[in-house]
Length: 341
Figure 1 (tube, one colour):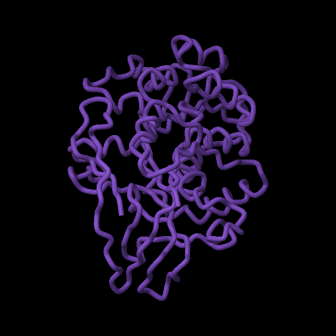
Figure 2: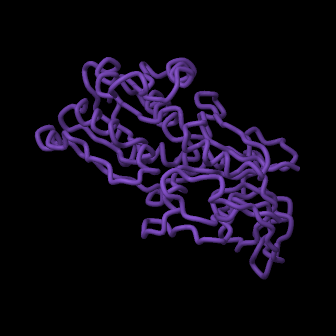
């Protein structure tokens, strides 16, 4: 089976030649293991950080070795009574066509909720890489547990048309936000936010200084900021936050390809007078909340209050290109690579 390898560490924005698709052997499963034929692969912004050889909260990718990431696949061989052949599972050996892994590292998708290979479930299996997966839990836990969302809060979300940001805004609406504002990178995405997603206001950050666009969209200020972008967006949000406002620092995609250290927000002194709380989050800290998250999010999916928005790229040959497009904002919702055949 084929697998994508990182062959050189990017300096700035990654290039296609930093990646190579190579044949690797597919191991037979040992006792307690399963072999999976991958159907859907996830590419995510956090993967850019793993391409740097620096110590972080997750180990960097090794050069000239298969990369990994979220995946959904069908079990084609099993040596465990816990997972039957034919089951669909979520696991973390993506970026490849086949994977052999310990069964304890695979999660079976319920047959009536997307896990039926015949397609009879009412939820797409790929949703477990997006709205029901890591991005969904990030949005839900970040807003409710880290951000301490309260009904009546005015919420600003940057990168609001992405896999996480779009869910943050819609959850905030469902939970009783007084106003939801989002930023995005194109007029089409702005229309999506204020149309289908139900945001009260949205703006294209290319249209002028973010602080000015945010002031127009939220003239009375905000209570909670969900940061996926960093930089100018974070500075604008600090200026717009009311006393005792909160900022959830989830991602800073504007800085992922930077070759020089970014300037800190120039208005950090406002954190003191406003008594603001800025808190970083990692989704791995919130796995204990996953059952409650899945129950609530599955209900919203089935009721139609939230949909499974995806940008789908077909064929493992195009996985690296899908990742590069993701870094350039080429996705609406979750970027998914669906394998052919």
